[in-house]
Image 1: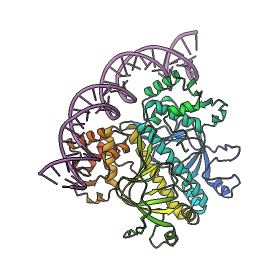
Image 2: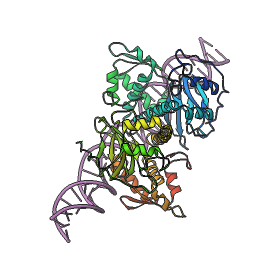
Image 3: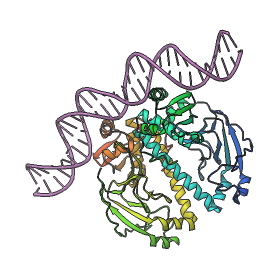
Image 4: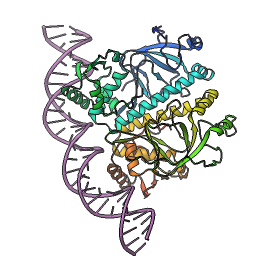
Length: 251
Length: 251
DNA sequence: GATTTGCCTTGATATAGATCAAATACATGC
DNA sequence: GCATGTATTTGATCTATATCAAGGCAAATC
């Protein structure tokens, strides 16, 4: 496990159509007044798929939100066993005000652009602008709910249910959910390798592969290409996931 | 799974030596000015061991902090599989501002006293008193870290490591940690039944029992009585838990 | 076009933990 | 002390998932 150095910060000016930073914690509206202040303390960094953003334990002097791409938070045991503990999609937030070092490995799973805020100034903004902190609390509570749903998955679901759950989670959050047709047919862009899926689900990658095949055989999913899945019947998938009708998956 | 009605609110006035509510989110200092305001909206409720505080999905018009005793948050699948997703010790907070119904079953594991705040007024205090919200954010971030440690346990640890981890977690949070002697010998008051332990760890209660016996056989723990455990060598226990020297267990 | 490389799939086998089934300990009330 | 019920331990067996080991496929490189 050699450390590949993260790329030096690039000051990309990625423009989002309705919000220059897509940082839910910061700008409820793009013309928010404190955005001016934040302009001074923010910068963009981009990473290639597979690159590490920070290693657990390393100093981390920024907080950030994902602009585009996907990042993961992973914990590693001494003997190398790995468990993903966070999956960051665009607009998700990473980093903890008041903490000096990273608590988890942060890795770019796809090409990734993050909008970073130097920590100290960000903390100042949080103190002087209550609704920034309130928004962050809301997001953190959402993440806690997601973590608890994830705990149910890890502790009690079968391998098949885990896979179905993960696909449903990605589908729900994926923008392409909008591609759902009248009959409930959904196309999902699966951004994780089998290995990343296994780290999310607490399985081996062989089991992930086998269960993907089984779900395909049983008509629950269609695998167009490795990263492209079709869900013929979303309700059927949810049923396979072992979830209540729609309970949970609060993120 | 019949619903036992929670006891009607009792207006106990439990007096804590340094803080009348032991509610870390609310009173940083006991003579805080907003405490006066909170006096108007808070009340105490007590529950007997085994009683349910609220059922998942039921309306919940309060937030609360644990004054004494232990409560758990549990998720239940349709077929009855259960996973604990929160373990609340004194001073822990439960409930989410801005949510109308409970997301989890909340159960009193021991006799329990909670300090409750009617939600609406509490939200008003949060808005008018930024540092209440800030403290709540801090606590929520701590809980999120604990949840992520828990996810590693559920996804990747062996049964033996899970048990050792749980004992270490309880020991670290238990007041009786202060009873640690020079040689590192610790007495722990284990407040969970084997069943509750199994729901925490994602195991069956038989496996919990077997692994407890194995740890006793191997001298990692001594079982004085069902609810009373001695850890002859805390470092040894931590090693069995598979944790880094002291990494993690941030709560 | 051939070769390498990185995923992914599939098969054979092993095993940790689940499940089913008693037996034992422990508390509570009589 | 004895009866009753609940929690726990222990045993025998089963099974879902891990592990070990080939192969296959498609994109990237030569």
